[in-house]
Length: 183
Image (tube, rainbow, N blue to C red; front, side, top):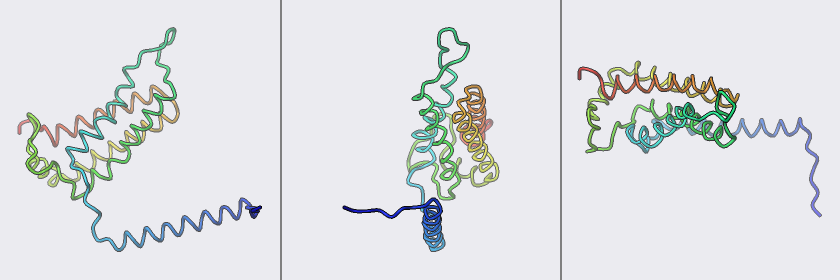
C-alpha cells in the first residue's frame, strides 16, 4: 500500500511558489531569446469575422432577452451567464492580437467588403494612426473587462451598459479604419 506524505499549507505554498517561479524563469528565458513575437495565424479580417463579431453579438444580444413573467428584467440562466462570460473573456484577450505589429489586414487577394477601404488602405491608416488604433483597442479591452466584471457580479444592467460601450467602440473603430467618411 502506497502512503503519502502529509502536505502542510505552508509546504504546499512553497511548492506552488517554486513552480510559478520556475515557470516565469522559463518563459522569461524563452521570451528573451525570441527577437520577434510569432506572426498571428489569422488576419484582422478573419479575427473580426470569426471571433470578435460573434463575441460582441453575444454581449449585445443580452439586451434582447425577454423578461420572465412578472419580472421587469430578464432572469438569466447559468448557461446564459456562462455564454456571456465566454464572450467577454474572448473579447478581453483579442487586443493582444489586434496590437500585434505584423497582423495582416486581410489575406492576399481577399476582396474588400462593399463600401470599405482596401486592405492596403486600412493597413496604411492603422500604421499612420497607430496611437488612435491602440486607443480604440484599449477601449475595447476596457469595455470587455467591464462586461466580464458585470457578468461575474450577475449585474444585468451593468452588462448592458458595457455592451453599449462595446458597441460604441466597435462603431467608432469601423468609421475610423474600415469605412471612413469622405474616403
